[in-house]
Image (cartoon, rainbow, N blue to C red):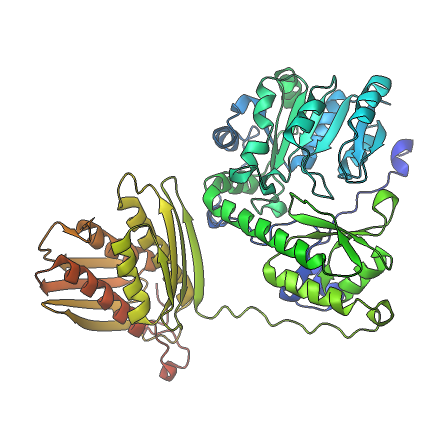
Length: 581
């Protein structure tokens, strides 16, 4: 029994190890690790994707072999008909599948190095020959050399990462067009396209995916690993020309995308505004990290990254040495030790606090003589969750962000686009002494209904999450709030049993330009999402402004009392049953 000779000494692709392995090896808790070595999304998946994962449909049944729901949703997102789209277990699966389809034994693949290592790996795995063309010193494409190689080598395929990994540079649209106009099958790997600066919403204006419909020599690959935070689920997709469709379906593994990946990816496509906010955070931190890295005397960061990482040249020591010193401190980057990239580090974009720890340690390691003996970085404390929560809600009509600190001081920042409603929400912060931030955008040109309803749901969910298990809280409150001629009475029980009764004898149809029925709907929606029992009545009053404001002040005071920790409970759940529903 023998292994194929060409596979006996196949150089393995070097994957990145996960948190738990790194934590055990270093003896540092997972929360203390600064993991900037795999271009993962530090903000993780959308809440809707996490909800889909916790409520999987039929995990005991094999998944749809054609991923039809996911592909249909992708068609709406990309503007490419679903018959052109194939879903995959990460874009890497499609790299291998493409070469199985088009690469004869000994066939050639054109590779613009340095670039993603899987192109060479899959070429060798499939019995092909890799033809490397060195990029220009600024990592741009040497077009004349590429054109000449196509003529002399007759490659079966050319791989081009846009933006390129590991330097993050993105060719102009005109440069990419020149490449795909060449007489060769071109695979554009757009794994990081969502992070480019001039691409509009999630990079759509810089993507070539819609060109696949009209071209015979173009394939575009995408992934959910980076922008959507689903790296652990391995789900990607590609757009393929018509002539490949039949062979693709014949050669693809039948159940290649598992149930969890299909449902989480589909949910992510329903959470685009939420995920776009996280992408913008990463792009902003990329700019800040570049500026900070440029201050380090022994590093030269490559300018112009359009991805979620920055490549740096290490000038005064081997990159392997610096990488080892950083690992010792619980900081992980990716280093290169051969070829064009010898003595380079690639640093993924993390959260701002990750950047700060990295930069502080790079300064501390600035003296090579002291680096090896430098003291270990103190373990950063586990995140103090406190009684805080941040929630985002994205629908086809609105995008809402709400943050709450139950133990705050009344700090408030509210912007819903509805001035009087902003004024009402401010009452919750000021009179409840909660730190509150609410931002909303959406279809106000239609009416205020969706915005007010979705703010109520989001805010109720934020309170629910901030309360956690509700141990030690007072739980109940009964308040009366006067507002000139108006009196509001509100009784609240944070019981876990959602029920709302709202009796207000409104004296006009609008308050502050808002239909008064929307205030009733707000309290009902808020109570349902907070899972509380809420009874609100205004027995008398003449001014709808006063009625609405008294109601929101009463809600604030009731929440302030009911959410308060009573030390006499000694952390017990406030229920004779020993649990709250």
